[in-house]
Image (cartoon, rainbow, N blue to C red):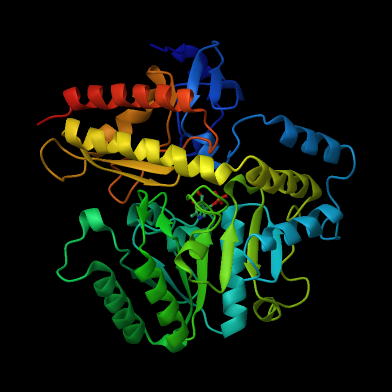
Amino acid sequence: MHSSTTSTIADHLRSVPEAARVSDSMIVSHAKGSWLWDADGERYVDFASGVLVLAAGHADERIADAIATQARTVTNVYAHDTHQRSELADAILATTGGDFDQAFFMSTGSEGIETALKLARAATGKQGIITFSGAFHGKTSSGVAMDGQASVRDAYGGTIVGPVIRARYPYAYRWDLPGDMDEVALMLLEAQIQMEGPERLSAIVLEPFLGAGGVVPASTAFLRGIRTIADRYELVFILDEIQSGLGRGGAMWRYREAEVVPDILLGAKHLGGGLPIVAIMARTSIFDHAPNGSLTSTFGGNPLSAAAGLQMLSIIESDDLISQCVANSATIASRMTEWEGAYEIVGEGRAAGLSCGIELVLPGTAEPNSAAARAAKRLAAAHGLVTMPAAGVHGNVLRFGPALNIPADVLQDGLDRLEAVIAELETTSAR
Ligand SMILES: Cc1ncc(COP(=O)(O)O)c(C=O)c1O
């Protein structure tokens, strides 16, 4: 059992606000590959990858070299062009097979979302946004206003310029309406658009699977339906692949698998190999609506993140990270299927590539077991495993996501530790 000296942790956290903490059970010292060490020298299997920001594991030498070389060359020139930035634009656009012809870089996923909203509003001259139950698009004010969970919005007012429609995301495990789920969800969305008035709406913003909303994948039929509705009502279709893109979701881009091309595509998370960078991709006809100079920011597309990004894209290719992700995802999925049969608190296990979630329920029911999900992270730490904070609309999804290249033996080791956590939660969950 791993144990950390709580007095040291309490001491350490003195100046960190409660709202900025995800764990009080460890202080991270260093990390390599899929292993992480705490300040006491205890070793943990990393099933979180930061928060899904490390595709090739921690401290990859090639990324470290790219960053070090760039740090000695040039790190910031504001919005002046650099080779790194334009090469990164070319490289990331190439992954879309020509679906987009311009790529613009900001620092965080939230900034990417803000930029996409600005572009959609400039392009349509309208303000309203359509977002979905369970959605997560970041923690800036617009991101919070778009969040699919009222509990997240409440403390912050949750406002956005113009109307916000919250449509239902098709969530099979908790769907309660008769008929074909995707068709019903699309029908409801269309009714909401008509009630609000399409002349007030600029964009539909969608994740191809809910990430923080509990790892809930949308079907190809649903994505196609969204494209049709966006065209019918002249809405800009913004696809948030900040989490799912560049391999994490089991494909370079989920939209390409579904053959549904959005108007604006966002990709981030591991793009910068751990450094902050988000890519906002669209056709020139969309970017042309943005007034000159109105999109830049201090750190957007900085040479350091761009150099790391170029190296990361090259590693995705050279190490075949996507095939590794698909194979590792299948291993996890089959283990989770076993757990569905073996443990009453496991309602459903879902893996969208290597974004994974286990829906924890009260034994013998489908009632959300948020207490178990909350307890899981600390319990996992005690078993030498780092997982992600509890997620999902009901806060009952135990969420995790290892590096795409986690070695098979480390993955098995991590899954054994995770099973021990689930077994312990099973015995402590009230019947
Ligand atoms: C789908 C999605 N959109 C947006 C964001 C926000 O990104 P950031 O935390 O970099 O602002 C996230 C972060 O987890 C995300 O998963």
